[in-house]
Image (cartoon, helix red, strand yellow):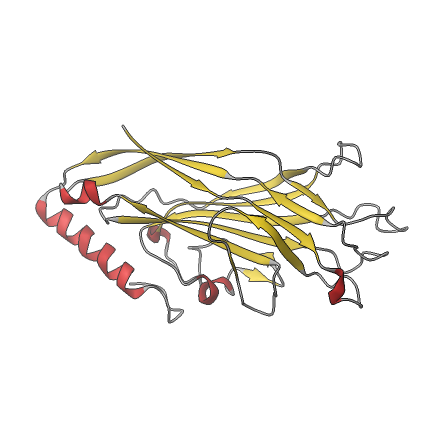
Length: 250
């Protein structure tokens, strides 16, 4: 059993009230972060959606013509998820409003042009489809491991807690073996605020997301020469395509 460990940094958002009215302006600014977080400039979403890409060098294995057969990935989170959008009691009729955001985690054997690829997954900043399903730009086998997590406010926590808890977790892993020399880990965050909130947000609104660690476990095997070469060719073709034209890699 082999193990790969990769940390994906956290991020802290602060609401920017200068963008309104009308409210909510639904614009967050980044106060602090760990890693090379980038905004997703897609579909007019402004600064509400960010992504992080981390490369994982496994060339030492491929030099020896070994194929990684992934078996499990453990996600270790370094703290709590917190979010505050309101500084007042919800008005009548909105008592069941829940602050929400989506987190998308996945591991691939080739780089993805996130800005070009993102529009197919989100509608108005809300995750509506998981990757590698029908009409997506990535096929099932191209995503080694992936999860989408919807977070909502923990209603059993006192108002001052501002804790977020997972509401829905969807797994779209293929566990496809790979013999490429670089793996790519992605983390995407999309912040949602209901357009019905009144009174408006103020500059105390925030979102905090902790660092996390991916612990990737699998076995290394030496395949037959033909199978190894064909797998290597497909991995090379995918990395060269970079998915910049919006088409599904072949």
